[in-house]
Length: 234
Image (tube, rainbow, N blue to C red; front, side, top):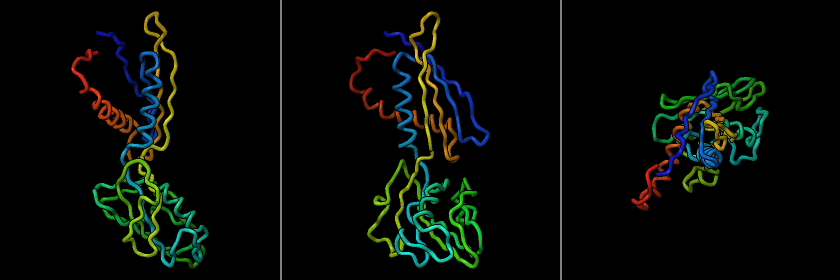
C-alpha cells in the first residue's frame, strides 16, 4: 500500500458579507496542488447551479439595438446591467419579474416586483436611468440553471414578438484564484500547499461552493473507480 500524507484544509478567511473565502490545503503530494486547484477552479466557474434572467421584454421595443424615450441607456446597456443581477429562486419553475416605474432617477433591482419564491441579493444594482416624466416597464423571465447559457440557447420558437433572449450567467461564483507553494513535512520540503480564493455573488457561501465543487468532481471520478477491484486502497 502506498503511503500518502493526509492533507488538512483550513478556512483562513470569510468576508463579513460571506461573498469571499480563502482556504488553504496542505500538505499535498507534489503536483497535486496544481491538479486540485485547476480542477476545482474550472468546476466552480462552470458547473455550480444558480439563477439568472433568460429573456426580457420592454414596452414598444422589438430588438436589443433599440433605444427608449426618456431612458439614458439603450437596450443593450440595460441587458448588460441585468446580467449582473444576483438572485435566488426557491422553486423549480420559471419566474416572471417585472419593473414598472415612472419617475426621474435611477431604476435599481430594488424596484423589481417578484413573488415569495424569488430573493434579490443585490437590490442596489442600477438597471437604468430615467429622465423626468419617463416610464420604464420591463418584464423578465428568470430560471434556475448551471454554468453559462448564450442567448441562442434561451431562444424558443414560440416566444412572443418583442421577447428578447439574453445570455444567462447561472454560476454563483464570479472569480477563483489558486496558488501553489512549497511546504514542509518534517525534514521533507517536497510537498505542495494549495491556497484557494473564491468570490461569489452572495447566493452561496464560499465554503459551500468549494464543498459542492468537490462533490461534483468526486462524482465524476467515481466513474473510474469501478473499472477494477484490484486497485490498492490508499
